[in-house]
Length: 169
Image 1 (cartoon, rainbow, N blue to C red):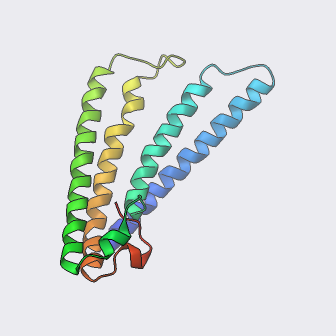
Image 2 (tube, rainbow, N blue to C red):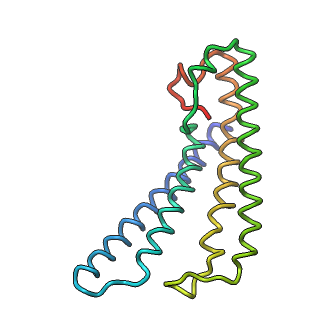
């Protein structure tokens, strides 16, 4: 059941990332076409930068769901099974703790940015744009919690990232 939930969560994040990539590609293409014909859009650079940031944050959540972040699986693989599992749990707990801090800090910043708006699109709040930080932190925490039991079980069984090709963080 947990594997099914993780797979559905991963699929949801894949669709979000695909949608963001498509919107970014369309937005940049439209901006280039307008600029080519002398009618530059004043907002397209700022929106493209925001979309790229969102793509990065949501892509990080997807990478967490796939356990595809950079790590040192070879070093962990050399440890005895009990130590591998302990280090896996420690790494996951530290990752969750880090993203709890990121999410909390990102949420706190939203209050500070509440009255600010984008330069080129004054009707769009900077807080809405920056909401990607706490939202993606929650998404990454959920990904960690969904994938942690399987990662610990693989570490215990000696099928760590070095043997399975899985990245480790």
